[in-house]
Amino acid sequence: MSAEEVVEAYVRGKDDNRADLAARAFADDARLTVRNATTAVAFPAVTQGRDAIVDVLVTQFGKQYANVRTFCLALPSPEVMSFSCDWLVGMTARDDASARLGAGRYDWTLRATPQWRASALVITIDAMEVLPPSLAPAILRWTTRSLSYPWSSAGEVVDTAPAIEQLAPVLARLQRDAGR
Image (tube, rainbow, N blue to C red; front, side, top):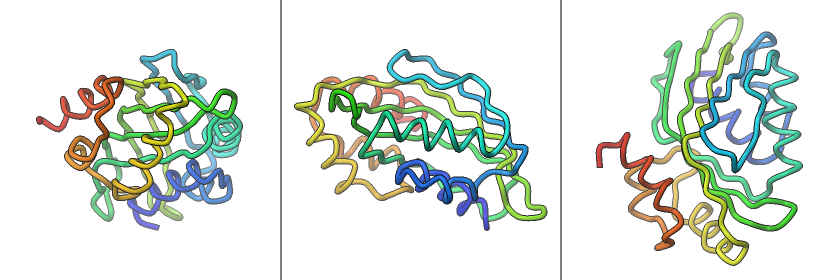
């Protein structure tokens, strides 16, 4: 797998609740660090090992959220050993059907031997907005029909965003790093 395929295996595995696919992204001894600046979603600060990471990011996450769409806002070069990009995620909560829209940064550390895998991932969650269930259809329509999946850009996100006032903090976060 290439760096792009590692990241995409993680995204599609998490979004589709497919632990088998997400597991392909991580080395056995991988380390996940989550830096969370919001209270709208919760993760352990540190998780060690592929199986534990997949449990946190796929199994446990999938029990709480549905209709997950994650967008990486930059592509890695084919054989990079580290890669950072902004991300956007949209989803609905299983318990109350509220929508969530969040943004942050992925910092990947990769290794190529014996196969391309992530040895470390730092997920920074900078913004996560909780929206009423009545806004979920608009968020889902946007994330499933208007954005290139799973690779997009901050420009595409901002240019196609629905006119919903509560999205402003997430869009501002993406615009800040995109220089828009």
